[in-house]
Amino acid sequence: MARLSLVLLLAYTSAAYAAKPTVCRCYPDDPCWPKESAWSVFNSTIGGRLVRTNPLAKVCHDPYYDAESCEALKATWMNHETHLRTSYSLGAPLYANQSCDPFTPRDRPCTIGSYVQYAVNVSGPEDVSKTIEFATANNIRLVIRNTGHDYLGKSTGAGGLAVWMSHLKTLDFMDWQDAHYEGKAIKMGAGILTREVLAFAAEHDSTVVSGNCPTVGIAGGYIQGGGHSQLSSKFGLAADNALEYEVVDASGRLLVCNREQNADLYWALSGGGGGTYGVVLSVTVKAHPNMPTTFALIEFASEGISQDAYFRALEKFVPHTLAYTKAGCALQWVVSHPGVQQMVTCPDMTAEQVEGLIGSYCDELNMLQVKHKQQIIPFPRFSDFHSAILGAFEKGQAGLLQGGSWFIPRSKLENMDQKTSAEFMSALKQLMDRNAVIAILGFNPSFAIAGDVENAVFPGWRDLGLDLVTGYLSNVSGPISIMAKEAERVGEELIAPFQAFSPNGGTYLSEADPLDPNWKKNYYGSNYDRLLSVKTKYDPEHVFYAPTGVRSDAWSVRPDGRLCRIISGDYSEAYDKDEL
Image 1 (cartoon, rainbow, N blue to C red):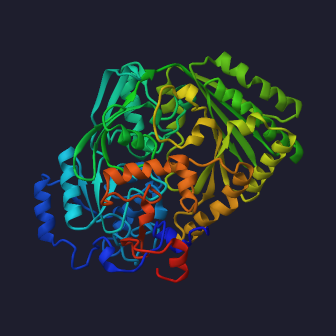
Image 2 (image 1 turned 180 degrees about the vertical axis):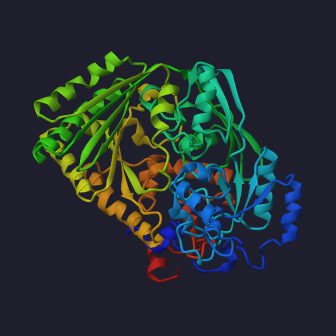
Image 3 (image 1 turned 90 degrees about the vertical axis):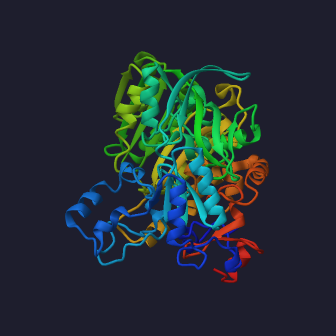
């Protein structure tokens, strides 16, 4: 199957459509679009919680231009904080399509464009139910929105009405007991961020499996996509730690989902993709001891040594990765031609233990005469490590990378011989030669670590050796067409070499190549058909749509942003016939 095109990317589509207006969601300026009076009545039914989109960046465009405000906004535009406080703005500017952008010319009109038209600031299940009822009655595209920390365009939609979950901030520490888990747990509202739950948990001498970025919302696409963590080699994925959800389904019912009640929906929500099966109001997760954590950093540069020695130093690191994750550590390996950073996070290990763990690799660097820096920093608690180390990495990172990911199975690394090692290095060099961003992550979320779990996470996680995350850095002040071209190149230029090395590896669906033509297999694997049956059961009328979500191929988005049902024909036929 051919890769999706630039036009389709900008429309976030997964398929083409037969152009019949009767099968499209209602769109602003259509005769079917609700009048102001209808919106006003709806607003009164939800206690005045309707928010009309008013783009932040209008201060950078006539007739609202304000030079001081515009410059201040530009300075913070690449911080997730800027976007998560709004009901519509996105951390990934590609999906905003420069509708109203601080870096486009002042005289360019500021439009709502790809942003949702309205959002409901949700305070509880009734707000969600009434929003679903209004959207369904008026045939309006419904979007589930939390923080906008989203790389696949799921938290926006042109002409859409969003349920905005960010202000559900409840937190409860509790004892939990069922047939599968007995211990401490934390119940959190859908709007809780990583930094908030870690701070709350620390008050109870506990921690939870959570995102690397402090502004990641736990209950949304993170846990519903599987969710990796610096704790994943100790306690599994975020979805492995989910005990229960409160969720409003497509009919507006409030459901409790766990392994006993609505177990099929619980299964799908735990790793089967966000924005697809229902609106999660809260999630209850396992709480773990807030254990001492040691962080190690190894750095070396290519300058001053031969290329052969540099690449041999890279190659020799690969076998050590399995020893690190087997010991309960997580790793992040940032690789480029100028130099390397190897970060190893080890919960419940002392500085001395970590020094012994990484010592053999450092000895090999010395034998190769590769000068390197080594830091080992112990923290009294995991939450202290997260705040000090991971919190420092997030600023200025929003939307910079147009990328994807690919898994390398543990079994592949365990059986790596000289030939396989050469193939791995050949793939890595191809990415380095293209000046790609390369971050190779390592976790061990096997069933032996995750324990008694039953969920829809991609099966490849259980045999994960390394998770390659790669892409091209974008110039956010440049044309959207260049950003889109960079995204188009990711699969063929960066993911393909590692797909050849590990053909059935698969990907993390929350950090995947959004243009992967084989997304059903590579995102969901053998779970797809079962997920489809859950989607059909709980959302038979297609209330929820998310790009590359389960059953999303029943819909397409036109270049003008309209969401339309596909009547007949497959993607390639429709595209070739220019039905777009």
